[in-house]
Length: 105
Image (tube, rainbow, N blue to C red; front, top):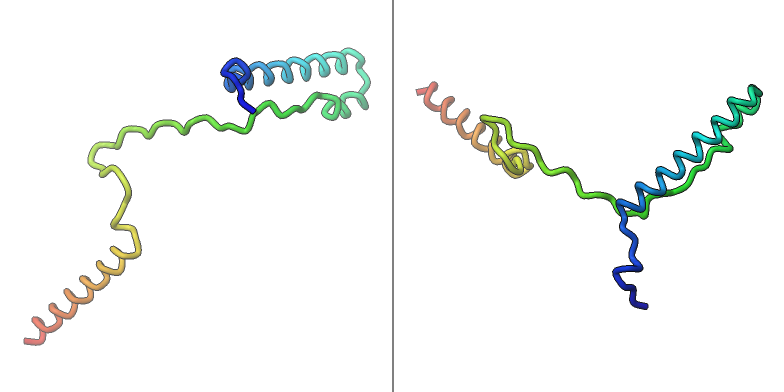
């Protein structure tokens, strides 16, 4: 089954349009309930307001990353990985041993 470009929905426009329709219907429902003045009807207004899924299941792209603050490194923090934590611990132990030997002499 092939679909032409004309058959495909314009996702952002569809989402905006259907969301606007649902919002308008909810406002109209609430206006009629508040005009009646019945306190029980106002409590049940939440159930009478339309709730429809307006999203087609596609998410928009994530926001682009902001600029790196001055003095900061960009990218992945490799020094926080387990490999580098282990490596730094080995270096620290080696340096402690070297200092201990130098102090003993």
